[in-house]
Amino acid sequence: MALLTRTAGALHRRPRLRLALLLTAPLLWLAVLYLGSLAVLFVSAFWTTDSFTSEVVKVWSTDNFHELFTTPVFRQVILRSVGVALAVTALCAVLAFPVAFYTARIARPSRRPLLVVAILTPLWASYLVKVYAWRLILSEGGLADWLLKPLGLSGPGFGLPATVLTLTYLWLPYMILPIHTALEQLPDNLLDASADLGARAGRTFRSVVLPMVLPSVAAGSVFTFSLSLGDYITVQIVGGKTQLIGNLVYANIELNLPMAAALATVPVVVIVLYLLAMRRTGALSSL
Image 1 (cartoon, rainbow, N blue to C red):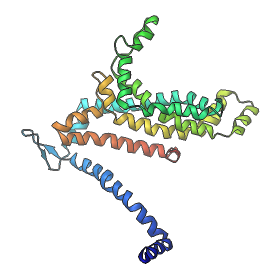
Image 2 (image 1 turned 180 degrees about the vertical axis):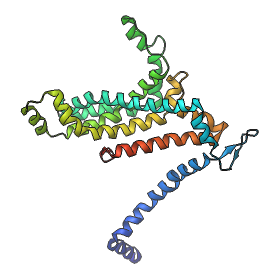
Image 3 (image 1 turned 90 degrees about the vertical axis):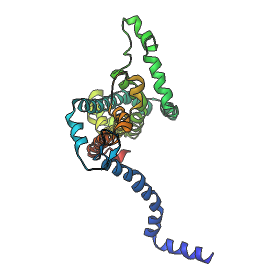
């Protein structure tokens, strides 16, 4: 008991020591399991594979990265993956704005929490259940065909548009929530002042609302972009013959592990660059 009392007293007198003890375990977890695994991934990308036995040869070489950036197929898949992530992010931003504006500024204050819960409810459902539900919707003779048939149109079927559409549905709540929070915190007197000065709704949106909400849009884009860039299951279910970088990583794990590691470093580097770009907008402080 006396030892425990002395220890508690020593920790009370040394707040830095107390903080260090509290952070040691999570920092070790981050350094060993997360950063350590990324280091192993990066190092293994420079290894090679024996063409006869398919075993990993731990010899330093840049052949994997040379092949990655000189092979047209790899370049096309990388550009396609980044394009899909950007398209999903743009669609999420366009769809999230009116929804978030209604929930934050138009709906009754008593209903706003219920609307937020309704927006977040799809996140509680299984990822695979939602993707397979979209597979049924987009399949031939599915709900999309049934709704568009009276207009003389048909659904997109399986392919790149279906992948973008499904990913947009999956990650849309991650964009709505930060925009909703930013709009909810937007001072009413700014909107009133803009109206008093004769600004119309479009000018108020461009000059008052958008600059203040833009960091939250960028914060939401961090989730939508990174989650879309690293996804490989959705494209397998609704993408048809479309290939994204996640599919190539999965396909090469058993056949060519160093190449799979080299492919996996690409989204990591792209996401780091994206985070650095978003940091300049103040997005990281809005997370």
